[in-house]
Image 1 (tube, rainbow, N blue to C red):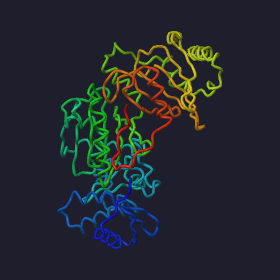
Image 2: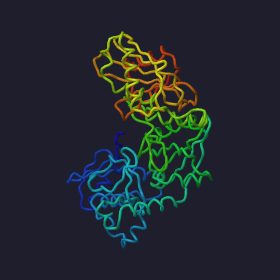
Image 3: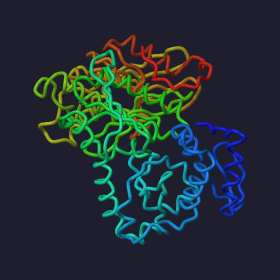
Length: 457
């Protein structure tokens, strides 16, 4: 995210406001730095200027700079009144962790999603003073304060709410407002959804995005999710890029108050769907019914998604011995499972394939019957000499289109599972072709401002 330059007149007012408080600053885009090396993010000021045109600019700047200096330099609660009065004005506020000038001063902040922290902030007429951990300690136990602040957040009135049709089934709830707490209301999403929708969230929760502090976008995780998810990802990316004070470009899965990222930033700045296995399984379960499609079988799922990607010796096994080695590995892993979870190796087979400069091992698996079980796995050794890569062709309901079929994924270590393509079939030739295209990607397109969704075939 690039920094925005301040207009000359606004920049002069900012420097003057800091000087009134005894600080000399230099401006680097929308960040002010004082002689002690402390940084003061001004993105919130730019947002305030846009949203409060009726307030005299000098007054707005002076008030906002006072809040920034108080937040960075202290005194924390300071002149806010008694500890009890101060605690009664606290709210949870989500901020991008990279905006912190001195992270050590905010050790009380809780990470609710990668790079997104929940702070305790003090309400003021012109903005929010993010308390330091020292100031929080003066007010009492941080867990108790956070719990009370969240309850206070949940009771706030909704400023503006609409349901946008996606054109693909389902609707996208959009809550906006002038309060910088609007995006933070994801922390009380169950209460908010009950208020705007008149019913409880479904057991699988919701998909949600908070691209700016002033907007929250969400939809229940139900059968309509495939028609909503792509729209949500694109809408969040657009709002993030257009905002003077962005919060998070990503889309998340909200379940019981926990946030799981559903997007990551790939090469070239494009968004890609991540952590797709659970989404595919849940959508498939909803589409097929609890009894129609069971949960993934441990023997089948883990052999494809854990055992094969972790092996480094299969590339050196002679072709005539490959079938026996795969059978040995299948039975060896099955022996670690309870007897009732062991599966027959019917359909297990493998063979080496040379495609251009790339050597691949294609492993066909027993027929999948549950979402995220794999039709096949490819271990690839790229011709450029880079390390082994592991690709999976998985059965399930496409989380974007809602169609039954297969999706192409890749494991990058044990923790990161990327979804590369949707709309696949179980056939071998398209699978190998898609893997080859990933090993030989086309030249990147010219850079564009707006982030897009992953490419789909």
